[in-house]
Image 1 (cartoon, rainbow, N blue to C red):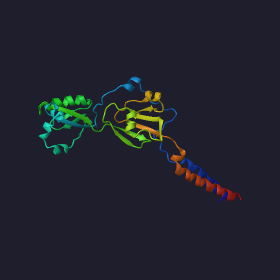
Image 2: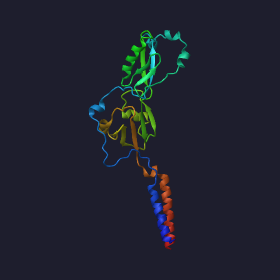
Image 3: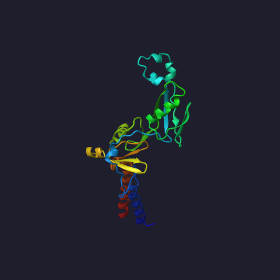
Image 4: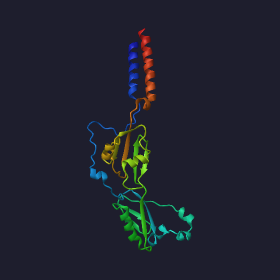
Length: 251
């Protein structure tokens, strides 16, 4: 084979390697991408989460209008075996696709579409049949937001309602050194919102309340020297070899 053909092939392989470095950019888009718009009213609107199919909920029932919960003098607690009470697990109940969940004693109850307060009221009326003045506390155990990108993969449980994007980022560890504050995406179903925390004005314009199931993606900064040091060293080594071979062949 002609030595120049070998040289060309080798040089082509070397140059091609510079574009083969790893890409850690997710959810990229082209120039025709249109971000979803959020009105100022919707951005500031606080709302209660509602129970949805496939949710996991915890239900606690107390008697005498929750007297045991308050018990300021701990008189009621003394009558109970504290250790056994602390070791008692908190079971989770699945809301099935039809919106119903099966609960002890009361059986199937339709809870989908209700807020926690509405569920408490409904369950209280059902447990009235079995307990004296029941007091019901219902909580979510699987409402969450997924954070991807610069902070790494994190699952943020929504233990409170009306949590903002800024709070989610704080719970995920804050804006990392390699995170791009100008390029944060909030993905909600088939909609994608662009979040910009690089300036105060952009923060006020784009920060919003997250919803369960949202994905918050912080795009990493493309730092060639730090992010692709291994690939660059390989490329430089191949380039040096190619140059040396070229000099020898020309001589």
